[in-house]
Length: 238
Image (cartoon, rainbow, N blue to C red; front, side):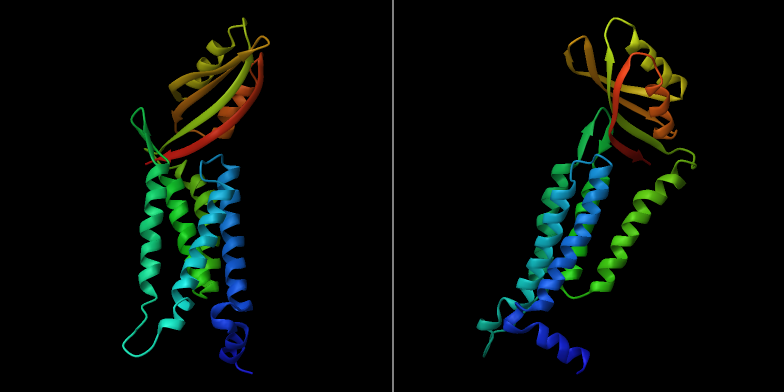
């Protein structure tokens, strides 16, 4: 049996066969992998958003390919590209909602681009372009983990990090935190109190600089009085 005959056998029942289920499953898995990376880095569009976008994009491509067989006839033609084109337009609204401007810094561009990318991966999986979907997913992880290592060694590239820090009150810890950050060549963009209870205070620090965030967190965490610390987000600004 040839590959085309096998695909035809799997994809019977007017586009509701095992082949289409496999394409949806692939889109779901690849989109979830990107969502896990976004969730790991504390981004706003994490696991659930990416998985929904990628799987839904694959479904809509399949609807475009197979959903109108019953109306094709004399004088009726089918253009599968029309639905696919509208998917990208719709995702543009999601991306616009993820981009914010705060204190002169544009945030969320990478997250919005990741949603757009996940849409393309889901569309490729839904269209049966399995290899392309897998390759682009692999390239995403190159961009997410290898590129930051490269850009940190390039001149003129700043990183903005948001850090949630908790510390005991009455020990001058906040002053030490700010001094340690500026001593590590990070500029304090914003300090926002989050909560205070039980003799402990939690603040959100927005810092901008060209160093490694891991080294910054290690220096801040070594200060006496700090009770917890969490990197909420990290964005590179070209």
